[in-house]
Length: 155
Image 1 (tube, helix red, strand yellow):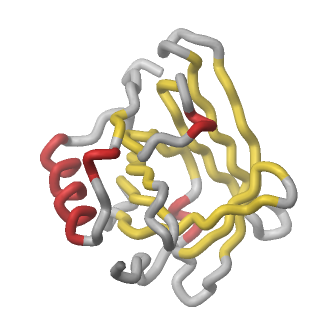
Image 2 (cartoon, rainbow, N blue to C red):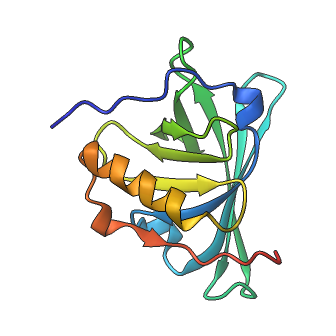
């Protein structure tokens, strides 16, 4: 198995804000959710507040929210973080691709068992999405496992 590399540099202040989930490997904690977003903000202690939300069943469904914290574990790149939604468990959050203008990001972990494609907009250009898939294939990901997440541009 090839070693997964992260991007070489992340400006955390530019990474903060709202991200829309475009596609992901299925994870139990997102079952049945659509319109999933992640919002990151800086806490006074330097950690990052994480607020993930999604609608149950449909874009108009009940909003489900999970709050957690993240922190940088590799200060040379800021691309490797840990995220925790409930103590004592923390998961790797590796930024493996990042658009030059922070318009999209791809997040995984060292074992490649989870994967998220995120965008600053609810809809990603299909040609960009296909380019990302090609690079993920080269990195050894089984892109057939990816599920697109329904987003509403009106939300």
